Length: 175
Image (cartoon, rainbow, N blue to C red; front, side, top):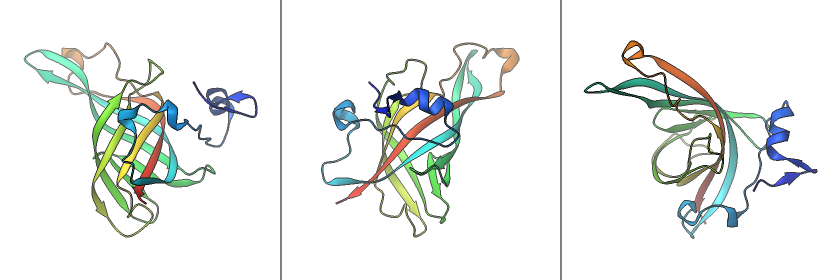
């Protein structure tokens, strides 16, 4: 269930808003396996808007759309540009700090047409900035981004496709 803001559902607000709005998911709505360690606290929440980039590839004639990388802009709670999300998966802030993560858990999105929700452990840091303390990331509230169910065949081998998506990324650090 989505939280409501001013009587409007989050999806409706996102569809009509010219600035990026973030819709909170209550802790009890986040599946247990996606919760950060108990000794961590929320640093900040970012909203991503961009694409999941897929490439048509495979082996032994079995072709499928395979994730190449995300390509998204990140926005803070006020809708101001924060940085970008790209291959790695990596997140980079405007101050030059960067983290790269590895997904350790996922659950299907409540929206069947959207990419899964994730829990990500940060495996490397670069630079000194706002991302320096982060150790865990949640990807929640995904909308879109799923690979197409068809269209990847021998005539499309090596082709890329971009699928629009949005998501909220919650960054955590030790208390």
